[in-house]
Image (cartoon, rainbow, N blue to C red; front, side):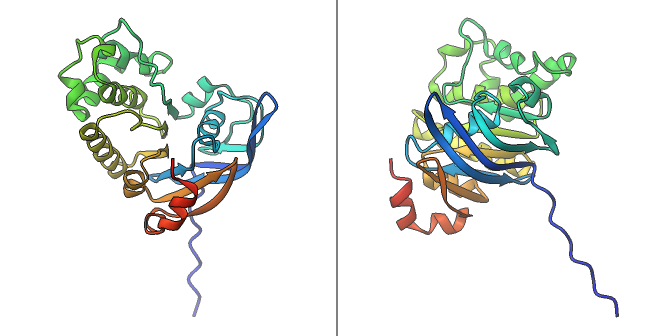
Length: 246
C-alpha cells in the first residue's frame, strides 16, 4: 500500500531572514526572522523603541541601511525602492497617516492609484472602497484633514487598499483614536481578513491586536524574543507584562 505523500505547506507571502537595520550608528534591528502567509494577520509587538516601526520601514524599502534578505511574493526585494515594492503588491500605512491637506477624501483616495497601472479604474475603486468604509462614503467631498483622527486613519487604510495590494503593513493604526473608532477599525480588520487580506500589524493595543491576529512576534531591543499563536500570547499575561507594557 502506497503511503500518502506529505503535503508541503505553502511558502510564506513575506519572508524576512537575518534582517538588521541601522539609523546612523544605532543598530536598531538585530538579525530578526519573521514570515507572514497569505491571508494571515500577524502582529509585531514590543515596547516603544523595540524596533517595530524600523522593521516595517525596512520591509517597505524606506530604510536602506540594512542587511539580510526580504522576499515578497517570490520576489527577492534586495535594494528595490518603495515604489517597486508597491508594484509587487505591498502597501504601507505609516503611523502619521500622511493625509494630504487641502484635498477631499475622494482626492486622497485617488492618490492610492496615482502610481498604479490601474488608474483608469479610479472612480470604480473609490466607489468599491467607500462601500467598505461607510464613514468615508458620507464624506467623499469633505476636506480630508477636517475629519477626526480615527476617520483620517480609516482614510489612510482605504487609500492603501485602492490598488488591491497583496499585503498591507500597518503601523500603530489605533494610536490616538477614540475607543468607538478603535472598535470599528478592528471590526474592519476582521472583515478584511475574512476576505483574504494579508496584514503585518504593529499595535500597542495588545488585546485588540491579538484578538484579530493569527500569530505574533515580540521584539525587544531589536531582537525577536517570542513567537507563537496569537491565542497563546493573549493568554500569557506574564509575557505581555514583560515585553509589551508601554
